[in-house]
Length: 115
Image (tube, rainbow, N blue to C red; front, side, top):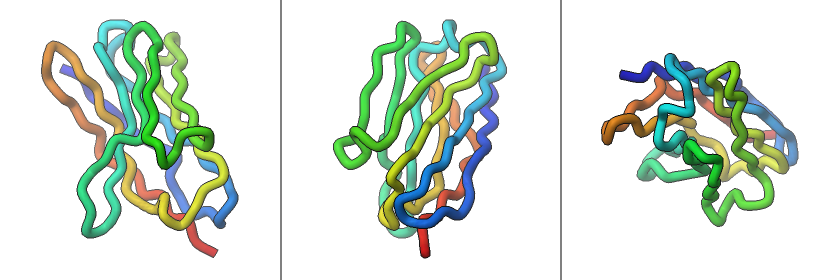
């Protein structure tokens, strides 16, 4: 199993930045893929960015060039650096891990972009 603990959400003005963290309970080298998803009110959960165990990354078109997924292997932590935030980025952001063909989710962290 994998436990995921997210942190770093909050309220930010348009154009601002936030960094989300997702700490895993096991080595992220053992996890096939880790990613960030988000869900806005009334919308489906969508992929924001993901990273495989070998470091390959994937981004949603809407965040490409603004968001960056990275990791600290020693800390078993994956980050999402979010720059140039827009009101439409407002959502609950979830960390997801794929381990042994099973999906594990964090509890979610709220990101609100508003002036």
